[in-house]
Length: 416
Image (cartoon, rainbow, N blue to C red; front, side):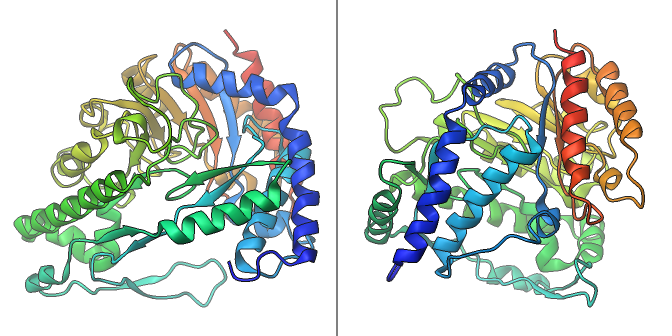
């Protein structure tokens, strides 16, 4: 962070930080944190509501003015602005804490392959995957990653960030995506191989697919071993992004024996997903994905499974994950079948279809009816409702504001 921050950037970030600190001091934040902990620990609560604008942020933030130019300063500026916006306009069940994340610098040599793609000419359009794994012998190109933590740079940046936000916000070291530890090996293989070729491989050369997956599992385990051995893992049981959408609060982590500071795998949440397997049979999902994801997930204290792939007909396999706590039920999954299998033994993390906020016209009563129908069909389950993958709100940000308001009103109707 050479020359970070400039006096102008410093003033801007401290101004925003003071506003975030005021928001974090509201009693509502502690109440929501307690609610999430009870929810993730499988106590009966009302359905919890979150929204992640994701692709819609460009529309919500269309008139924002940025002051910071240094890349890391801009990242903090954007982070603080989004938290302020969420409080002032969205008001979901996300918890705003008086902390900023400081990334632990990790150098990773990777697997030796770089995905290639041809982008679409359309804004936010689909891309075409150009295969980099072509011949069977190309498996030899997949290397075990070498992971090294740069503690000198990490401590230097942490000291600068602490000085910047001193007396206003705390600083929390994190590794990965805001502390979220995830793995999607089959999705990675699809980016190297191409989706159509991968699907054919499952039938025509399954032994080769197993050999590739074994290498990916060995590589991921080596990464986690290195991060744990070098003391880079940190607890992710507070307002950390959790799984494919959620909040990490729980009283069941860390595991007994945790002494503070660096965490052990058993102190943490982790997640896995195989979105590219949405149309693959349950038996193939088990053989080629879960068979490798399960050993990874079971290294940790609690786990999440799934993202956009429908899992209602695969739950017999998914529920064999020993430490499973949260399951993502996508817009394309059968709600009744999922509710029957999950019951009150797992968190039913429902993702409603985001098309409803992107349609030509905004229909709030349709939103309300759909949310009520979901809550009726999942009585007795431990549910949260998470709107994400919102690539657009049709340039009407109020739709997202309205969606949260309606969702929370419905959730209160179904409070125990």
